[in-house]
Image 1 (cartoon, one colour):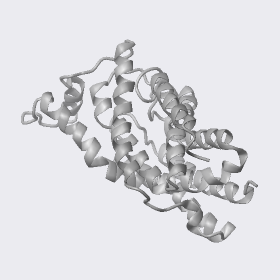
Image 2 (cartoon, helix red, strand yellow):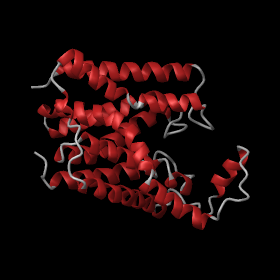
Image 3 (spheres, one colour):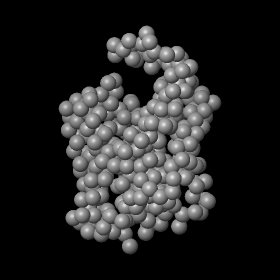
Image 4 (tube, one colour):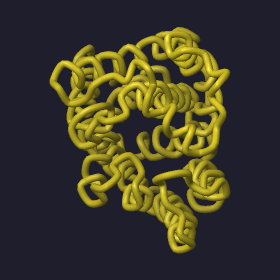
Length: 285
């Protein structure tokens, strides 16, 4: 039986906090393009913990069911290592296909990145050549930044995979996965409308983001259920963000966000294929 009271409370708090904070930021002139104000960046990072806060408030004051339902446990170390390797590999496939299909070309010399940094007044005279920068950045996005991004990602995943997904599972896996994915995508709507991920495509961007969160969500859903760990979901979210906003955007700066790269049709389809393959293995009940 679906716990409508708990779900509605969680969604009202999550969307209420997020839309209020981001709405005030947007009203004050905050935009994603260019160099967003630092206070806005910090606020957006903080809002990633809105789903976690909504989970705590709902369990504590509305449903009073205890926190065991959220599966806050580490579990086996194996999926953490596997996903730390699989997710970057999937990004390599996505951008390889983007290049192969003519939807974007790699900027091996980081010309656009250097120009952007110089426009901001940075002194690049001591910057190493791109042949050194790119491998170092790739290592950083695989070994270091996932821990930082994973901490922020857990703020979301305690809500999406720790609370909402189990609450929707009585509807059946397919319906639960689609609902969580669409809700997760719509949660990003205010930022999408001001340039996040899909600059120049505000309305289509919201639709595309929901597609991405739904297909990516299948992969995260399957493993978080299999290992009964919302911490694992936060880790996977952190690895994804480390790759998505790290080396690949610098290496492929001119990709059309709707078609190529991780945000476009190519990325959405690749994540869908991976998610369906994982579902067909049948390891999750």
